[in-house]
Length: 381
Image 1 (cartoon, rainbow, N blue to C red):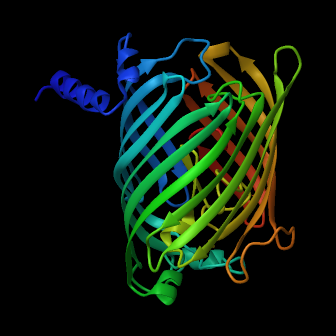
Image 2 (image 1 turned 90 degrees about the horizontal axis):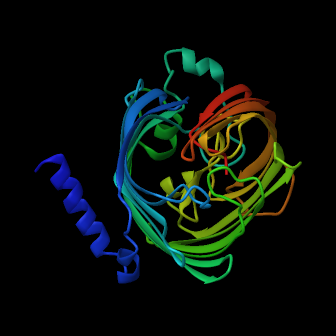
């Protein structure tokens, strides 16, 4: 099958699954685009890859970057990790419906694991000695998920999501924290369902300067004897000046669970049309290294002060920011609203936005783990 025939067959399959009202609005061309993917983390080292998108563009004044998009991403890293993902997102094919879906395979060859709870330790010297993989494990996942959102009224949405994941963890050769806690290998399957109520008043979704995004969700999972997760996330943005060159934004996240929460579910907090890696790194606390703390319950706070250095509107921008992050996980005793034993980090960074879709953030922070550099593929929230 040729590339054109394959894209045509894919279009027929995707559009056939959408309501007739959505298909009727397919009045513009879907266009191809290709661009490189560059990433860096302590888990993976430097990563390179290619992203292919087949996109139905949104009007320039739309709050979302595209009406619909089908994407393929393939990447590898210097540490042996890889990502093969197929995604579909339709935030604008219909004014009252939104759809997202994802499927693929991901390997984190040197996934950091320091143990469970907020009292784990990190001895940097071990990473240069004979047990240099002491805080590592090989994590592989086969995953699929889909979410549909229906507008209830104005800015209020009701969303339903389903997901399935098969995960495998393997301890490295020699001594390691994972080997001590779980043995040589840990496998598991997890099917989940989630309902979310969302209030979204953002001025736009790709470079937000004003508005509020509040969501609360309940999730049920099948792993073990079953478990439940309840999550609330409040995000807000406030701009200053006629041209909004200064703005502040913040986030409060609280997630609590009960039941037999599998290990892999403790690294991810599912949220509306996305997920957040927990806890430490570019998505939660930039003053900590990736996955520094792992637990079933999480409380986190983030505050950013931002300023544009160069802004050419919808074509892109170069910005700087100062930030402070604080939070913790809970393992024994469950979730609490407390500031006790919170991990606090802060620093500054540079953000580069290219058009309405590509955003890279370069974060330089200090905190409990000393100096930490992270490269984010998008805004923190």
